Image (tube, rainbow, N blue to C red; front, side, top):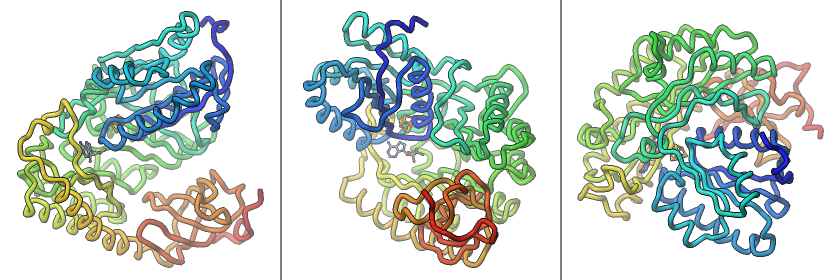
Length: 456
Ligand code: 5AD
Ligand code: SF4
């Protein structure tokens, strides 16, 4: 690496979208620090600004254009700032063209499949002064030499695969992140072992569809095997994963989850809709009946599991009856939590071409009805935690109440409690006193570590 060309200074990075993007940003940060940049949260103070963008819904896209508008002024004042755009939006040629034409303050555009090239792109920009555009259409080359600058020392994301082969008709991901590709298990295990040596207690395995992990490897190895191997690593206490596609959730995986003590009792299983007609139009490859039978199998095997999901309302052709079937399914599944979305037309996807788009007004009305139905279900699930003792991984000082700490249960519930900030990163027992729809409050059980305010 020719370090001499890099103008060392400060960088700041803004991330939109999913955990994949968050983790990409952690890798970008690592690369930048490796070539001498220092992190700052203050945009005015930066020499390099990066926007890691998302394309999944229109509102994610609009936010970025808004920010770019605001940055025009800063760039006029400080033309030496290097402004970079990356992430899923940049995979779209039409979007890149708009940016090159309307937002000339942008210096470097790169995509999701070639983030490892960033140092080289900065170098070229500094040498030539030109706007650099570098995009790779193929899914990401597996590059084991990049590490990540992780936000927390005690919990970490690990990519186990890149890309997606499912082509749900509403979704842009297969067009931005390319075809599915699994990392070698040895590399994943090695990363987890290294993290554990550094004090990490919880890992979250990331992939668009972790249940099909291993299909692109030239050997007989699957996601269950990976979980079993990771479960043996000393020091790692909790294993989570996202996202599971219902069509590929095997009995073997359910058994593995039940048998591996470190695999947390939480499953995120996106259903998207409760209507078979809509599921078919979405190309989800399962029926409402198949999904419900999966859920009962999981709950039977792992009785204390927390089940969460993704639901889209207003997919093209969704009638009032279809929507009611979604509500009916949500009630049957008794979800612990859900990410709910209003269908957003994404250019280039099959659903965008469908003629029977649902009017905005109806979509919004259904969205509100869905929330009104879901919240009491979440609340009821949480009520069961009252007076129970739960293991909590202490994460940080509460953002809303600086006198409290927050952490998560194995079931991924957010818990607030009083305690010393030295507990951050530790696993402790908390007794739950009160619960709400999205959070709960409790007190530390062990007298030797309990009590007191947060000491700065
Ligand atoms: N409109 C609304 N929601 C979407 N999702 C994906 N694409 C769209 C879209 N076009 C949701 C799905 C997916 C989650 C990550 O985002 O529910 O599971
Ligand atoms: Fe993540 Fe999809 Fe958004 Fe890309 S488009 S950042 S894969 S949610």
